[in-house]
Image (tube, rainbow, N blue to C red; front, top):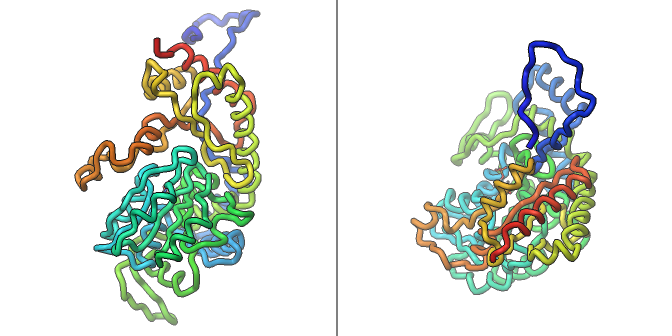
Length: 401
Ligand SMILES: *Cc1c(COP(=O)(O)O)cnc(C)c1O
């Protein structure tokens, strides 16, 4: 620790030998927003049209281009996109939706929101995604859809997923909140499939501050999505207005859309940088002395994942301290980490609905020990080194006796 700064009334010459200041705090993640985008946002603010308008239309067109020409609409979150997809799929009360217990709680909250029941299946502990081998056993006559998540950007096997969906006539809502720019068999996530939902939260690979988009199958679905987006309203001519369904208030502002327009051209470069840093993590974490500490690394996928996050599983049985203490020590050393995520079925709301400890043991073990390390496009190799060195030192100091 460095000595606390003191203020002296008498101006003295600086000492010749400066105390080495600690490196700046390394956050878990941070968005990269260029000056051109900031200037563009200022232009929108001055333009007199700040809510949904031309920038929203333009962003939708660019996202559609990115997704192979499929219809895309933007919304003010990557949560309402999934809720709307479920409504478009006709999912409602009495229906079941198969999903994973290892995700941001939005994934299953939207199922409850439309009045349906989430049906969790356990994860594959290697990919940490929903285990497709367990999906068919969970299908009942009430099953209407599968809602998979590409955790950390690692894509769920789309061939198997859609083979199961086709065979059982199920809709698919891909929670691709984390996998924009990931690919499956050389095709971008979003360019194929049924409904595909992306999030533009600041932690995601590109941002609109808050926001998201939904990729759909045809213009009929896109028109319906526009109704769900804004009070169910359909306008015709100068004064025609009709309302036929209950919509919400889910539109994205033009200010936010302008941020997205400044981000999208950088997506592939951002992801390339993430991939390069992930490689450095593997290189350092695979050094024999670090490997011996027993961390479980993510799948070393350098062709399909967008490396939204770099997550390790702590060696619970060998450690004398819990995850929170590891995080506290990293924080004290100036390194931010995160937990993505606690197991959904163990939240109070879900326990009240009948789930309990032991229902999904693989997800529970992973969720208890999963630790997200810093990874973002402007991070440096030296910072990756600092994270690995600090984490290794903490783990070696707290081995189970
Ligand atoms: C971020 C995220 C969401 C929700 O996105 P918001 O834009 O925050 O509403 C949903 N699912 C997953 C897996 C996410 O990471």
